[in-house]
Length: 187
Image (cartoon, rainbow, N blue to C red; front, side, top):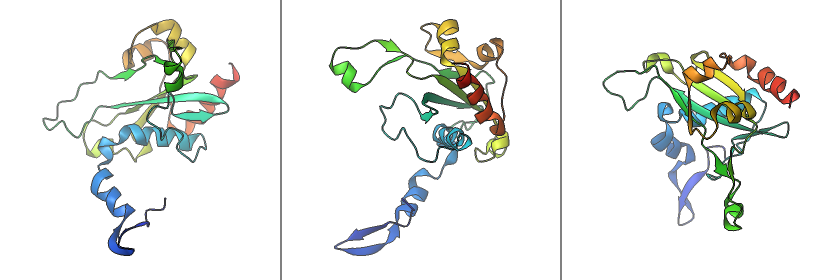
């Protein structure tokens, strides 16, 4: 879609379009950071079309025949009106079964369905400092899922402290592709 698609009534344009809808409902970028993180990682990898537009998709980005799961967190949240910011951050790593069809067929083995995790942290702790469109506000922690499986077992979350404790350091936007390529090349 381009955003210029118009709403019609009785075959006539009514004076507003899809972009107007987007502005009305989805323009609070602070509440869309999970989708923005997926977009940023996809763009860093040269992927130009969303691959997880179905809510039951078990990973976010396909790249070089590998499945990449993008998780996001931030210090600033638009709903936090008191301005208190916890520096402890946690990412979800819950196991899932293969698909809706496999659940129907009785194959309900739960495992992590991706090959690589990209944990995205927006580091700003105020609205001004956390603009998600400023790529300098992001840190990216890129970890093979095999490491998560080995070190985290059945845990449903992993903390930023644990990620750092495992020896993974933050990458910048311009380092995402090289780091993922390096991981994939060793698989």
